[in-house]
Image (cartoon, rainbow, N blue to C red):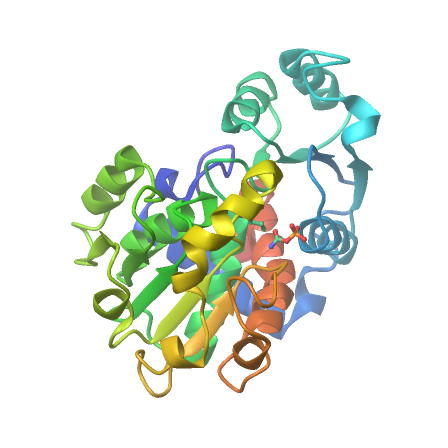
Length: 311
Ligand code: CP
Ligand code: NVA
């Protein structure tokens, strides 16, 4: 059983990550076995930013588990403006069984978790996106079999996705190379934590500005938008800086012949990835999107149901 919340993959043990992925595979294969686990339960879903996948997968996931989800958008509760985060946490805590939050500041998710006794799930913050990488690693294991020993090259901005990929690689034995322009590296403290975590699995977690070195021999090539939500003002300036890091056919050719292409979506075609690559046989982007549903149902079950009842 893991802690009360899912805030960052770094907080989980290697066994806990493996257990979530194992449950996700079972939930996907036999969804009917889990239909009544959350009967009568309600999830509050707080969104400070837009969403397609996160909103729909959590809401659908709660329905499929026998529960219900309430969407609270930016104009509904105005996190920290209409009401303080601790007050929102303590109010929701009296009414719902679980909270999912997509916030700008990571601190808001931490504060919700601190003040609410019910579980809190991080649905993306400026620091990390743990649910996405659980779905991604479920997808990789479906496509490649064994995770341990694989190499994933993440090409682009050292952002929330890069952080979470480094953490989950470290916990599962997947080598993760962050390949980014100078000045856009992931946070040094995250790299240090991930490298420390990786001692248990032997994964190599590295950062480079060299495309050839970063992508050559990779079995998975991953990218994300060059300007994350909230950075729209920088988007134009970033285009010129990131252009050499576009995932196109020439870049894919540097990876293994059977490499898969991944993207958390939404994608900006023509920027970080070409149409040709995202539509190619190598692309698994919609499998990743689908697996959000299964992986998050697994997270909810692991947070809310006693271990003996699941295994
Ligand atoms: N990948 C992802 O989190 O998608 P949304 O922003 O649409 O939720
Ligand atoms: N890095 C992106 C991920 C979107 C799912 C963002 O934060 O906007």
